Image 1 (cartoon, one colour):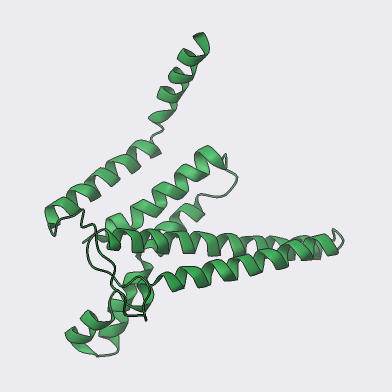
Image 2 (tube, helix red, strand yellow):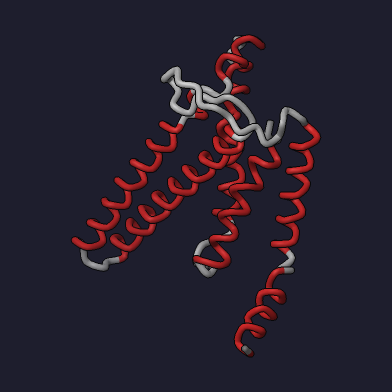
Length: 190
């Protein structure tokens, strides 16, 4: 099973790499943190089961059910596309007044947040899928075969978390920047 650290670090690493190298830091670091926190989101079904007093048995029944379904991601993407279409038509059809720009900014943040949330939930589902049998299309009772990269071992999952943490720290210290610059200089010399 993937630990919570992996559920946070995988979306944070992916969004931060996208932010640094593809988007050229055109969006705030807060979006990276949002991806990390949302990466834990699907596991909150455990807390809801316990809070409702449904007991240990219900936790086993509800965990990895509705919150771990690909239908959740599909719904988020559909809503994000709808917000984007509203955003595009609103900006296109209205004059560039302050109210229009303010509304456009909120719509932009809304669809961008929905994409980040969908991506973070997808990484969570992917990590859980790599661990065991899974009903990706819940509530449909179709079980997909698993890959089981953690081999049922918490030691392997903890090692994976340690690797992700080291990768995150290296990325935050900009260790890659001089290596990339040196590689670019070598390519330019030849």
